[in-house]
Length: 288
Image (cartoon, rainbow, N blue to C red; front, side, top):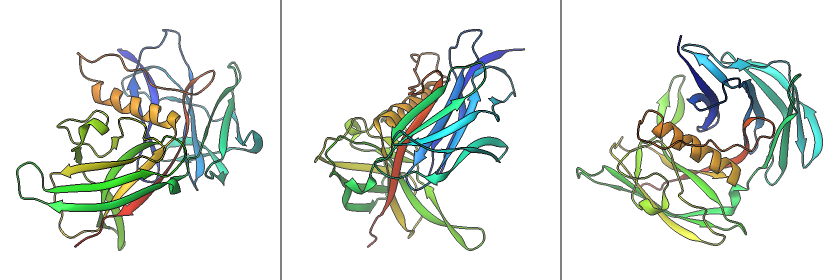
């Protein structure tokens, strides 16, 4: 039976993070602890702790439900995390919510392994400013909608961003959901991995300096009519940015025989994975 080395990785969506797997090179005898959590401002932590390794087709990751997992805030013990099952997966959940400008450390103790740990801060989304946001309709073959906006970094530090453009649509139960457009960047030198491809999310190519204002523009090939639309900006720490950007690149090139090996960024000691901070905000696009 054919086996491959797999690493569980996280990708972020609107309110949650989602786990998927990527094939990587690991030592033949490797079962490495993997600690994964993307900490979102004003939300409890949802930590995944599992083992990477060689999986046969159809196999799942080896989940760990008996680790002693602890949370620290600004290096002071906060609580022990409790396990719960969500959609068939085991998570270690905090009672506390993550607060901006705080540093959080997660540790996981498992017999037979060294203490696994990682830490990061929660960035302050209120330090970014969006101006002159607009949407332009077109009947050309190139695009149907163009989204423009200026983003200013009002903090004293460089910042890292991920962008999505959302539109509202009706959902079951008289609810409204927000769905991302497939978008293409226009000012390609400022967007990582840009070109002619369309994606639901794009990362800024580089950190935006303190006090700097940059013009961003995206196009979409769909026009769903007079719906409310939003620019979603995720503010990432450098750790989260490097991790998510490397996961995105690895995902894009996974099946290409000509691509170079991608190293998945990790800040976890004595293991693999990510303990990363982020925050996000949706900015309405004015309609005419």
